[in-house]
Image (cartoon, rainbow, N blue to C red):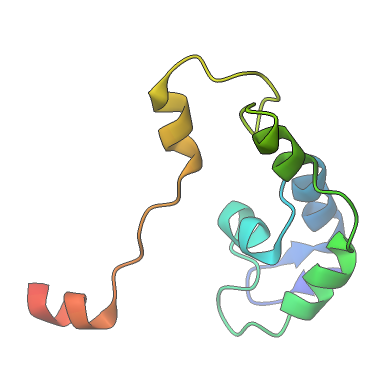
Length: 96
């Protein structure tokens, strides 16, 4: 069944991203774009994710990389986990 009709993301795809470590709707959105257009699917995504233990968060608390479950070997791996800052509309207008 489709969860996000804007991008054609199915419930199965959301579960696959969750199994890969995405624990929040925002992380699902980063992985698949689901929830980034009209937003009507965010509650469905929250329902699929539930309120259980987040393996990604638990791994990070242990000092492991969230995606691989192993300790980071360099600062470059840690940089990969940090999201890029979003450009604000005001900044976009100034840059244009």
